[in-house]
Amino acid sequence: MYDTFCISAGQFQSKKKNAVFSHKHRYLNYGLLGIASTLGRSGYNPIVIHGLFDTPSTTLNICEQYGIRDTRNPILLSIPSFFALEWARTLSSLIREYYPDKTIIVGGRWVIGNQDQWIKSYLGVDLVVPGLVGANILDIVSTMNTYATQTSATQFRSNNFTTTEYRHLHEKDLFQPSIEVSTGCGMGCSFCEEKDIKLSKLKPAAIVAEEMLAINNSSDFVEATPYLESSMFIATSEWAEQLYLERQERGVSCKWRIETRVDKLKARNIPALAKAGLKVVDLGLESGSLKQLVRMNKTNNPKSYLTTARELIQTAYDNGIWVKVNVLLYAGETSASINETVDWLSSMQKAIKGVSAGPVIVYGFSSDTEVFIKELESLGATAIKTDVIGVTNVSPSSTIDYEASIKISKNICREFMDSRDYYDLKSFSYFSREYTYQEFQRDLEGLAQEDVSFKL
Image (tube, rainbow, N blue to C red; front, side):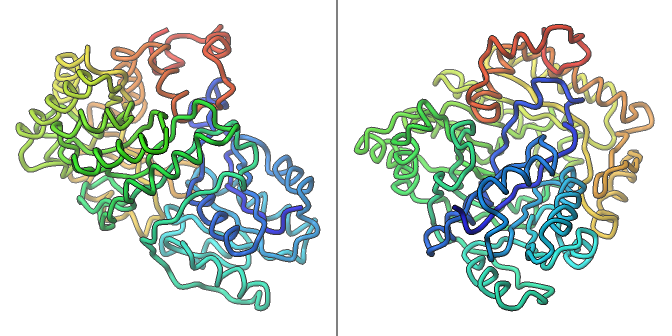
């Protein structure tokens, strides 16, 4: 039986309008799994359970099957997004009802921010830990075993390179694995939650290759395609060459995926990265409009930025790499600026595998988002309160309201991505690994074109 329960809060409904296929997503909470791995190396026997789209009661039933009633260690509850906050509150209430003696510790830096005391009260839990936890989890768990009245914890940031152990993951065969290779960004883009968090050093190629080997050697991960997690992947040709050599030495052949900025991944390094297994790049282009790129603080030289983007995308295509371009409808958007973006994408259509487009959304409590919302409003946008705590929708301009921006975003996606492209990109990293293309096609039956963000 397991002695430490690590639960990733789920959601009551999908952001994708609850289409059947949207419930096939399995977003790995790799931060929580990393914490469990640290605990596992220190003598604990943890299990990581994802709430996904199950009800809190269903998730608690799974925990009961693994022996949660017998553990004396704190329950670790991670909240990966504001959309999971109400789910977490319901689960906490259930735990309090059935296991009133249990201690609950909550983490989730994107949600907590500096609101740890409010969240502690709102969820009715024993401790809320802001910031990155890292190896400090050992002190937190041991302290809470003996002193359950503690109300705050020190923020902790660690750049120690540790490995993730998937033996602690419930239904690990259904997830695509992740390898965290760096944290932070620090580039200052207005819409980014990591704009002020300094980018950490890239994990050494030898350690990455060793983690890939462990994934390759697991029968649960046959033909797995790991995501090298980093908000801004920056690698030199030397790092890429070293990864290639380390993989060759270990007999590793898996393909992998990254997320990066246009101006940080150099086109000249693409061939070496492709040789080392890179297959998918999520590229934060954001816009093809010169004015919008400046407005969102993406670049001070938008013409050069777009020239760099063109070279990068074309080089990736020439080296067999899929590029999924991310587009953001930002404050001040007009039909003219959107047409600029669509025209730019059209000029690169052959080299683009897919597009993910959407309007800017503000995440955070009002005290934390007030300045950013005022900045958006100064550009002509209007903030719209939602029923979800910590989520503010935005009408980009007086001529494009929120609902129109959703419709425009879907149209952009459909213009550059069909159902096969969408499935290929999703199954590479996000869909349950048992979910086949044939099942996906069946789940599309009966859906109208306007229901989905890809061409049927």
